[in-house]
Amino acid sequence: MKDNEKKLQEMTKMKEENDKLMLRIEIILGLILFVFFMAVVMISSLIEMSDSERLLILVSGLLLFLIASFFLLEMEQKAGYYECGKCHHKYVPTYKSVLLAMHIGRTRYMKCPECGEKSWQKKVLK
Ligand SMILES: [Zn+2]
Image (cartoon, rainbow, N blue to C red; front, side, top):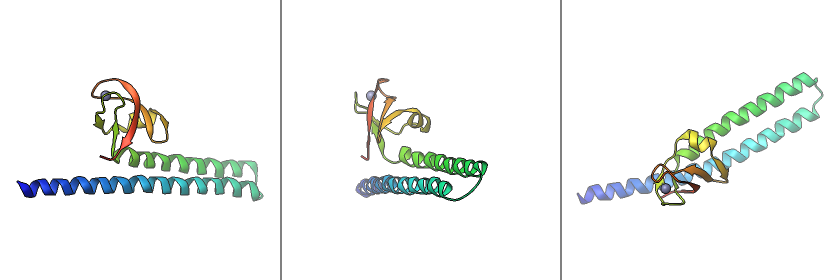
């Protein structure tokens, strides 16, 4: 019994560490992605090419940026929990509700599955 509790504690701690790492990776990858996209924009305006070629490069850069953003958002959705501003219920929201929610940084305006109220919900790791 005691061993199980200890194991559970260790697992909870490991998930917390892992979540922290995931959120850090998200920021770093996000930055790299942004720099990469800006570089694509700059290079395509510097190099001599036709308008259609330039458009093609910009559109594929933007597409790559969007696809990668979806993956990064998925990482954010799975790491840690969101805490309801009204009843402080903690839960992992669906990808769709994270994607469609208004947000300021990592705080998102979502409906709580527990009390059904909409509020600004903070990302928490515990
Ligand atoms: Zn709630």
